[in-house]
Length: 353
Image (tube, rainbow, N blue to C red; front, side, top):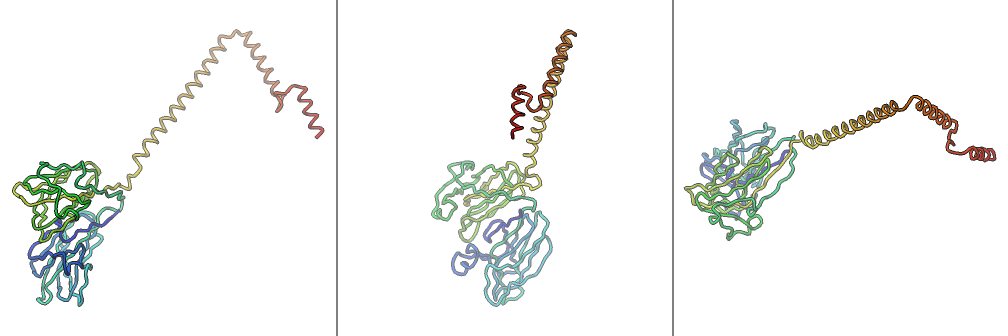
């Protein structure tokens, strides 16, 4: 099943270049998702997002001083207009559906062609991922204090903060020690890493199995419970996740929680379960038939051997007795077990009726 992943403007998954303003959580920002936006009036400013999926949408705002911008998706560029006579928030700026499932790159650039309308405001991105023949089974959250998560060295990680009430479950693990790391193992097809961004945060290396990505968690304002990293399309097997502060960095990194997604291939559901009962049933049926055949063969052979050991004269007497008993049973009909007197009484009762 396809599903949508939302990437807020403050996520390290988005790479910004040029001159951008990261809004404070006050004033106009209250009109934006999660009270944040990125804005630029420079024609050199770009925002780039790479994703795996089949559709992508960009949300932002439109206003009288907003102007033209371009969107380049996998090398194809479109020019769009963000101008509107009145302010409109959390509105769709661009959307593309029907993409082949796979890796795509989207870049937004402010063109600022008109000095009276130079602004571009970005709020959040949404991309659709997953395949139609996948059944999305479940998402489950793994909080930072889960026993399967390892923090090394242990004394480099703290669990208190002045803003702890803003974290998921009101818990966190935080470190600014160079080379300190956090790791875990999980079974799933997709994983999301949530933490914080802010002025005191920096780079962190994220490794899924053997593939490493560098994230920049620096931002002009503090934002907790931010999607820092997302990986999808993982095979259905055990995976390893490691996040490490670079050896030359003493900037902060927080782990808040992980979200793990598991799904199943619709074409394969139930097949492995069905094979076992069918095979077991076939084996049981064959064994039963074999047992009956063995029993009947043994009984026939035993009777034949008994007959061979019986003298001919006795066999004739035995056969004659058996024949007479068969005739007697046949003449008795349905009342074969009754005496002649009983049969006569029965016929008399029938006549009286």
